[in-house]
Structure formats: C-alpha cells, structure tokens
Length: 125
Image 1 (cartoon, rainbow, N blue to C red):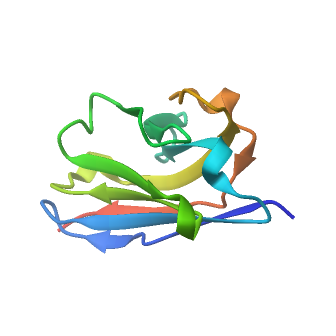
Image 2: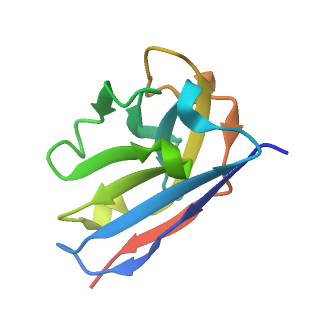
Image 3: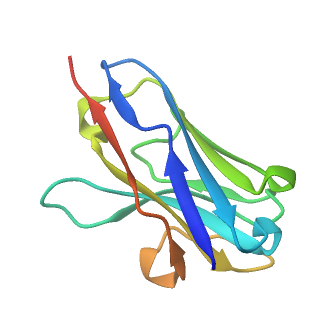
C-alpha cells in the first residue's frame, strides 16, 4: 500500500524553526517528484515547495523563499522541509504529495497523485 506520512509539525514561536519529514512506504520515491503544500483554515491549499526525483530541481513559493529549504534522501525514502524564521502566516496543515515524474516538479496540487494525512504547524507567541 502506497503511503506518505508527515511528521515534525508542532507549535513554535515566531522566528523559530521546524523540520518536517515526509516518509514514503510501499513505493520508492526516487522516481517521484515530491511537493509540500499547506492549507490554512478557510483558505485553499497552496504549493510551498517541491523537488524533482533527482533533487536537481527545487521550487519555492515566493512567500517562503529564503526561509524554507526542501531536500530529499532517497536512500531513506524521505523528503524534508526545513522551515526557518517562521511567521504566524505560516500556520497551516502541511501536506506532502508524490507525483510520478522523472525530470521536473511542480507547485500545483492537482497534479499530485499520492498524499499524506498532514501535520499541523502553528506559529504563535
């Protein structure tokens, strides 16, 4: 059974950091682009960051550029999202998703096939 499981969310003060993990099981991620998406209460789901299967292409939403870093360890079948300088507006449920793609990655949720259950990130003092 193909599964993605996010972890690492929690409550953090503004300016703090968190590292989210997306662990895959039932398939190997080395031929999949992985995206991180978030959905705040009452808002549509938006793309945060994505990484190609090789790791050679990474993309970020303008709102997180310079603060978030995506990486992957195909040997561990896991993708990470390092989030620094967190702001209250980063508060959301964060999801990872997988797209079968050998070359590119995209910040468009509708393109992704497999989704995790999400992890809550709350930035508040």
